[in-house]
Length: 333
Image (cartoon, one colour):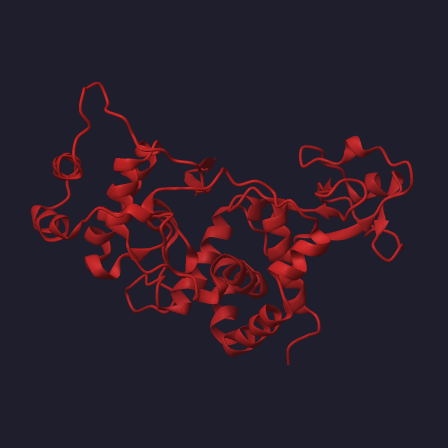
């Protein structure tokens, strides 16, 4: 789990991790799931969740064994961008993204204008994180979260998300059966955690609801608002692929290092076609080489950093940007 705080907003990225069965805490015998649930019920009431909601939802919460994590902490794929990008963004996904962009162009343009995020990036992010809504999760979320808190070493995180989910039910009047998610605790077509939903979910079509499970306009608005709050700039793009000269000092390659176009040009960096970089010095830009000096090189801007707030992986961010470029070129009529 990675926490990022920007201004007043908290950004939460949940990575798959190894979780083992919890041992007894300061006792000789671990509580049963029912006993653990009773404790959650008492805490829910202490936090102000209405008795009616507690009485309605808690009897439906059941142990959910698949909620236990089995993987390792997420790392960059053991591959290269040359193989990763065509696999993650195959041609069928490009064609689907372009078709959906055309279908939803009117609402995307309205939402993009409202939140200051170009529509192609909304579609690209949606396509990468949720396969355009096909991977939205259909498991009973409260059961998943309660079981993960009970069985896992990440108890504090999942307890917080459990109470955030209860607040979603209280705030937005969502039924227990409609509050669905994946075994990781992510929900709907935005893959928000419950606490992210409370921060970033938006009503995109003005019907008074924030339905990130079934409503594409709410999904688009929520993703756009997330990126806006992450620092997205509507008057810029994400970056560009570049070339570096032989003997280039690779110590310059880091997100921590920022230079102007002129400074990068002075170091011999050019556009990918070998032409000069833009003649402007109003931006602070970083050079990244995810696969090392022998792989692809990119100059990346602030919008790229905004994508990394979603997932701190260059492979992830570059898959989104690659799909966004394929949506943009050739122009969709």
